[in-house]
Length: 342
Image (cartoon, rainbow, N blue to C red; front, side):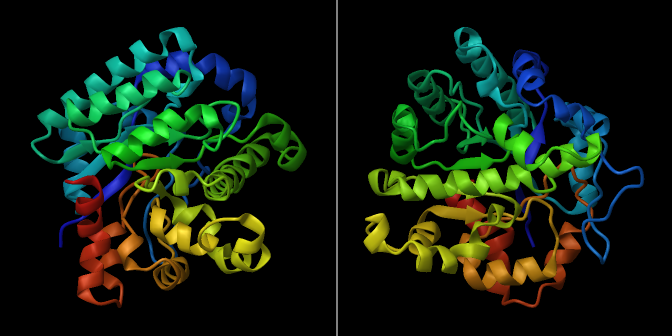
């Protein structure tokens, strides 16, 4: 069975250098983030391993034969690749040129891959009008399948009116936006996640809890602000089993009914109409079963989060799922092909 994974990352050194001063200022604790001393299985039955940041970055720079070989070994047919550097953290005056050049490099790697790679664009969110135009260029001229945003687009979230031109362009082009987590607001990080050993505080702030919580809030702010009612064609992708949100949809509907929100439908309905969920390499049977029942097979797309996690075990996890074959085909490749026009 064909397997397409859509949250797979690349490293662009120019984007990284541009963003580094902001990262050092706003999230100095990132320096303490690393893999456990002994590689940790993310599945009790054996699966992906968490790699050290150094190893992941080195693998992320490679978009040629070595990556394709790793995909072959793990039974992955296609990766949709995106940059894991937050392009919006660099200086506004150079953002458009930097992201355009980085997207050109990524498109060249896709072209050379003979159909094994596709790509999400990086956008200069610092200047929304230029971000909208770069999205159009990447989709219409470079053949990219949408864009990925690492964290917040700026000091605020995408419900901020300044980003309306970009969201309108996503809707008009009919391509999705992948909302990937990144570090939380600094005051929130200090109040909620600090106070432990450097490695525990860093991980608690980021991949252990904090950035997933913020990414879920990002989706909810978009729903509650009416973003999806203003942009009916807008579709977003949420990793890590939906960044906690699906597990609280029933609570959200009860606590914030339409009479309170003023929305045209319950929160859960808007979510199921506009959000797609991926696992990001979290091969947990109980989580999969809950998402399968709550969101449904028509809204699940697979992802491995390579190279921050290895691709080990994804194929066997899917092969072992006791679900109808038609649903398995949707999850492994048909939903991705439909949404991303692959």
